[in-house]
Length: 266
Figure 1 (cartoon, rainbow, N blue to C red):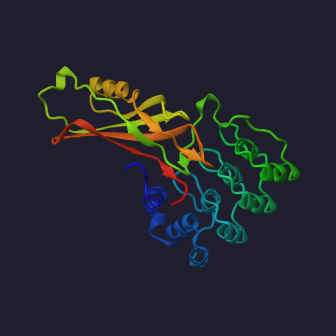
Figure 2: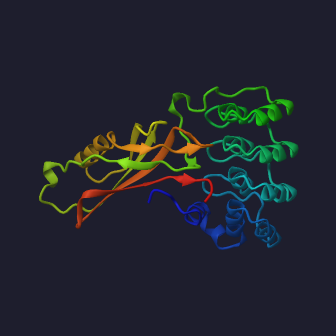
Figure 3: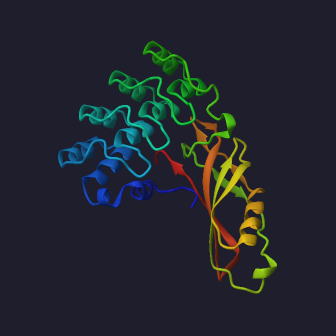
């Protein structure tokens, strides 16, 4: 499952109570760019600044996906233009990250803080400079940007987790079964978080959920040999975060590897 379907992604991040009312419609419409559905959801009482589990609001999602008309409607409805996600990203930062100059201009006009930083010190200007977006750079500077923010958004190998093109696993390594488990039928799964560089090579591997100490260690060692087609933003390879599940079941004792990552639009 190399790509999460947008609807599944949204349902997984919307709180259960929200998924039962117009808030779920608002999130989906903000993501997919449906102005009429956004207006309808708001008219039915959806909270304009309702937050998903990752802290994102409908305005954050619409800015991330570059839906100008939806951004306009949400701002008219009183959305907080400076509301940040769990990772500290404000709508103007994600709009700039993905190169949506028109959305950034709308957010600025509505009072967005042009010097807002995420938890890694990245600003809208950081992304405009990285993306060589001269128009956005000029807009930010004319709107009060002080040109601050880290010069390289990926210094210290800081990854992103939403992509225009998802990272794709293209090469795996064999997983060695520990002696203690040979002859046994292994069932269950191991979960990893993998950070990969712009060339698709793992930089770090974190064990999120284990199954057996020796087997877990062997899986991590095998994952060091994995190779990916890197994720892309604005058509450029980026340092990326990928989640992986290695599942063992009776019909597959070698371990079935599945990776997942998020896209910002269909």
